[in-house]
Image (cartoon, rainbow, N blue to C red; front, side):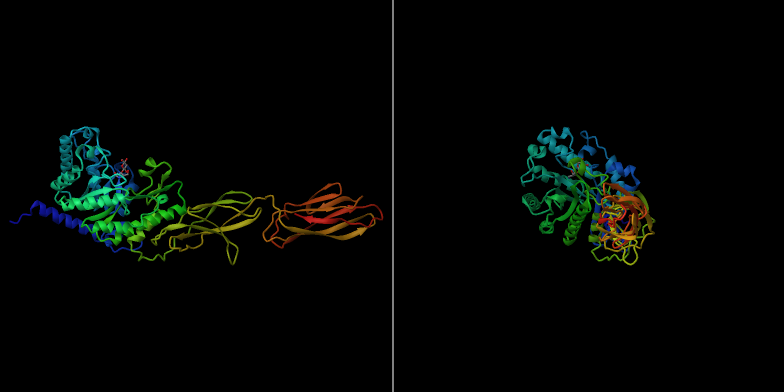
Length: 553
Ligand code: 9MR
């Protein structure tokens, strides 16, 4: 009888798993999730997961399962979680992550075995020989637990062993054991799992600099000594205010040329809050560039994002005033950075010709003399580039002016003309510039405002007799290029003349100066439009003078 050796069985299982996630279940199209596109390119796209939201939030689980084919435990496999007291192991969180990944056909990267942070005090106080034994025991137990698990394929064996200048970090590991703890840790991991890919991981090593060069020299030297370093992890905690490491591809390639696998292990791109469209766009470019760098390097296995939703991210807790570092917002809506990752993985070969759905009927909120808030049922976009925002137009016949743009399904329109009726409608636009159909319109009228504008007034004497006269019409014309919503005409009565009546205006007299303001119904004048009012005056018998000095404002 032919019996598979356990290690051969394991290899076959691993191969099967790899094929399952590398081969797309369906061919990728614009609406496919990230993992489908990544698999089609032979890469993984991953996310670090936290056990709390994984247990408690279905939106978190759904996106984690749907979009990613690789998972890293954000905290659950660290020493303080797995061995809080010496030889008392707790794998509840780690198992939850591994089980989730197994159910969803995802590979797991173990993070992390030997680190200066999140390591219990009992380890830090040990003597050199006890610390070395404790480290080897920890690695053996943690790696050993998942050695036969097909989902768990790689480990961060040592994490962040360099300082930022390229020297060795003077951690308790280094201070107690010297640099030898690194090689010992890799050997212990290999002994615990002969198949897992063993990585060294660090931050600020994405570009070519003193720290990444120190890492490069260490990896080369360890491999020359036969230490089983298979892989280098570049964390990728970036910030848009500090610039992009433009030599990232070149850097990945120089490590690849040492014969190791490379991977982006903890990508996030933070910004100074608050978010805005321009920062989002810069962030999206950073994400796109990182993914493209990995795609361009054959030995780059994939990209893991450090979380996926801004709802759960380490950034705001660590960097005051910064955040929004991930590809979904707090409400699990994909951001421009999601589209950037998606489009990069899709190879830019997908062209989005599908416009978003037409927005629903808008409704108005607060309307003032020069502003109006408008809200509408949102659109969706399935074309791949994602919903970018909305344009709000005024219905005006042949060419409808654009009144404003919004990235959300509401807007406060400003700069409106007082006492004016507007009919507005909304069109959604996607990241590729496709515009949806027009929503139904909503009508509103702005309130009366102070009005005013360039205008002229001319009075015509219609009828006169020896003791009086009628001026009709006093023609008021809007001579400006925009509508006005009110006017004030002043003129002077000759000495001894008295106003005895007026119509179509609200008139007051001070000395011989008459001030006529528009009535409620004739204040609005479009450019070049006119209206009129009239008045009657009595004068001394035989006086033939009439008013003069008509001015309009
Ligand atoms: O995201 C992790 C956060 O929840 C923890 O509080 C923190 C503790 O140090 O570790 C964070 O993850 C780190 C990762 O393990 C190693 N590289 C840097 C990550 C961000 O600090």
